[in-house]
Amino acid sequence: MTRILIEYIFPLLLPIILWLLWIQYKIIRSGQKISRWQPVPISWLLATGVFLALLFAIGSTLHNGYSTGRYYQAYVDDNGRLTPSGFK
Image (cartoon, rainbow, N blue to C red):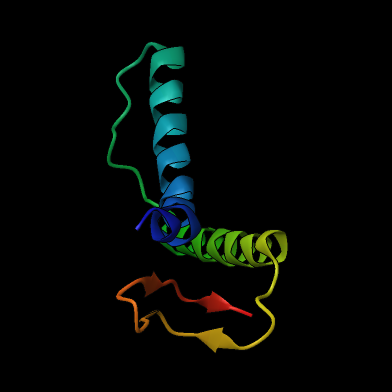
């Protein structure tokens, strides 16, 4: 679940959060009443979020490396011990 949040959800939401913080900063800095309902560049924010999600996914794949070898499923041996799954 954490991996999904870090690789997909966080990068998708990051541009929207930064944009909202920037609008809030502009409102505080100007000291005037500025309408919070400005046209939202949603297509640019989503495109940037998708790009960041791809970048995070590719980066984590390159950082963690590819799994090599054959995958063995977890099983209980004859003595009743659990043998964990993994690549060998």
